[in-house]
Amino acid sequence: MCKVKDKKVIKVAFCVSYDWEMLHNSLPRVYPQADMICLGVDRNRRSWAGKKFDFDEAAFQDFVRGLDTEGKIDVYEDDFALPGLNSRENGNRHRQLMAGRMGKGGWHLQVDADEYFLDFKAFVDRLLEIHPDPSGNEKAVNVCANWIPVIKKVDGGYLYVDFGPRLPETVPIATNRPHYERARHNGHFNILTPCFIVHETWARSDDDLWFKINNWGHAAEELEAHDRRLSYYKLWQSLDRNNFQYIYNFHPATPKTWPGLQFGPGAHMQDFMAQLPTPYFPLSSLGLRIQNSRNAARIRSFIRRLRK
Image 1 (spheres, rainbow, N blue to C red):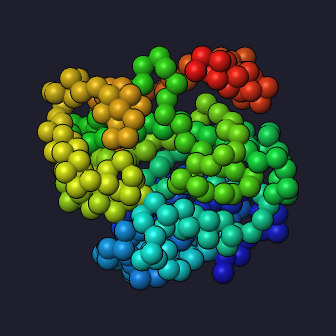
Image 2: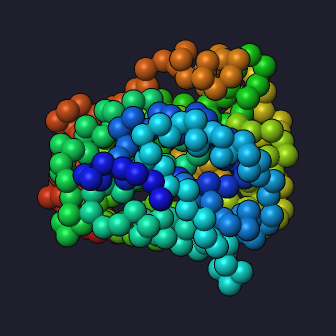
């Protein structure tokens, strides 16, 4: 069990699986500000869909030991791939078990191995402004960050989603009351922040992406049909530095979520992030306060019902 300071306010969990090596980019970015870190890995080295995956045990243990200079990391092994559940249900259960492992209270964060905060300290500062030490009995909220989805490594750099002047794709990262219904989504009120995460979601080798498409949580939903997975995979294979500008609205579940692509230079992911322009966040301080107001949310919901 990890050794952490008595006050555990920032609790960060990672679902560890076949892509664990991406932790090299994600885990060091959160380590300094985290009070407690849980790495949940299936004891049988199976994906949520029940498929066995290769796992370099020695390299993983060496990485954790080398990084964990303050004794914050708990490597939690359990059966996270029950045969009676689909991949989405196993993913939800995996996250819930890690939250239970870290205990009630504090801010519970779920960060995936392929998610790299551009400024994790700024996100933590936002959490502490909302509540410096949640007990777990407060009104439930999620706190969201904005994704910069990276789609493919191409000649000279990477293709990533360009949201233009609109709000980017957001994801609930932190909550004061962990309850995972659809990955990190639930019925809690969502608080938006201007913080960004580079999400290396599709920028993998051909084999690694095909394995991911067939084993991740979404495989039980929008990419359930094999023909659809294969078609989307072939579209991804065809992308290059010259034709990306002709691709629009291509998110596998809700196409308009990813309106278009942009090219960013970089020999590797760290190089790409170092050269990435400051992400555009379209809301002013006032606009963000209105967006995060429960009363304003009620009014927006009422107007939507009237329109229907």
